[in-house]
Image (tube, rainbow, N blue to C red; front, side, top):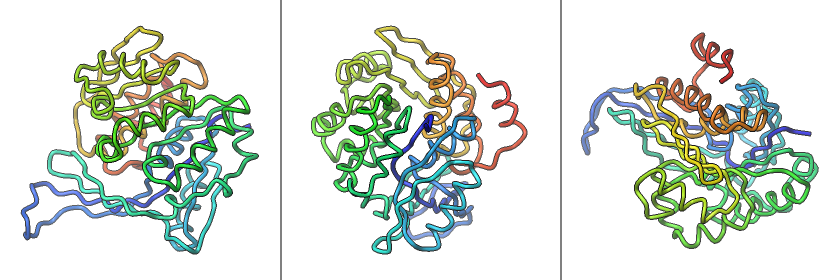
Length: 310
């Protein structure tokens, strides 16, 4: 049995960072790098780095980027069930990090957007203890039908389910009512939005009001609200607990939410203590935002955080 199965996107990030504001039509020096990404793959990687046996399910192209994706998951000790296709290229994303550390993304429609229900590895889903999905599998169809079926299969076999709503802009473009209608039917046990996503979904602006309303929209779900520079808020059975931030030294916000989700699940699925898991996840995501990219190479400081374990 896999402790955690993450289904969704693997994409390569073309990361572009400048130390000053870009001028339209101008030129500047900066940092340009290729890094592994994709929200679902990021979550799987961080859960694995934090010690949880994790499997990734996704669709990649039969191309060089697909080969690199396979090699990357092996290096990260993430077991992989990959669907390979010649019809589409492995996903890629342009990530622009501005002089303040905030990021903007342009996502291409790679192979991950064309996952079909018939391609799902049912034996993997039937053996999952917990399934994690991201909204990038719900904004279009495909792959929405595949993600919905994956949830039904895993939940039917007794697995728990977590969900990250992914993008406040994409939620707005899909329509809040449509998004809630689609995602409220999958039976999520843990909901992991950030403040902007929560605000778009609820119309509220204060964290506790956002969390309380989300608990109404998704009955029975633990609400794990990510607050970026303000830490996080755990809302469980009507009780709100604020987790203070571990740093405000923002270098690059890319992948911060994914690292939080992976780290949180690694501890929550082991011990069931949401507050302790959120505290640990806040420390992990704080380390991430002080580096470049969604999955920076581990250093001694990260190893120390992992060794503390909570």
